[in-house]
Structures are given as structure tokens and as C-alpha cells.
Image (tube, rainbow, N blue to C red; front, side):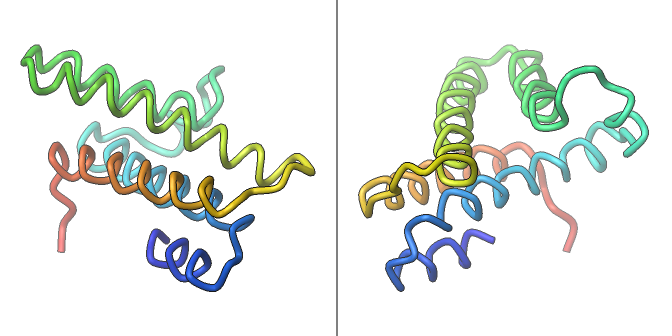
Length: 126
């Protein structure tokens, strides 16, 4: 999905970029939920927290549990960037605000940073 966000940006479709950038990250967080935490879709649906919040919170908790300086730093970066991305996505998807080129660029940069953090701690099966 991040490649889609980049293609949309390249074609000046800035409004669509935050959605794709955010969901590119969320897909990897879901991978963490299912394959690293060994949780189920039912576990996710049984939660009173919103799915996105629960998924992001679980990954954040995992980082804290590692109790290393690097993981603590990544925890801070992950939370900051995923929340910024979520804000961009909500703005793009649910408001009439314009998403400008610089917003689109930041959404891509934040997604790249989040994905790099996620990839450091999860090893997707190929």
C-alpha cells in the first residue's frame, strides 16, 4: 500500500495518500497481532478499544516489554508517527480540509519510519 501512496503522490493525488500510507502501517501491525502475538480476529473484535487503537497499543506494549534503550526510543517514534499518520488519515477521509503536497510528503515519510520500526521487530514470512 505504501507504493500506492507514493504513486498517488507522484500523480498529485495528495488527498488519497494519507489513507494508503496509514493502512500500509496498520497491515504490518495486524501481522504482528496475528503471527507474533498469536491473537485471533475474535480477540480483536472482543476488545472495547477501537481496533486500530488496540493494535497500535499492543505493539507499543511489546516495545516497552523489551526494556532496551533502542526499543524505548522506537516506542516513542512509533507512537508519535502512527498518531500523526492517523490524524492525517482522519483529516483526509472525514473532513473537507485540503491535503497539500507537503502533508502528503510527510505522510509518506512517517509511514516509512513506522514501517522501518515494525520491520525491525517482526519478520514477515516470505
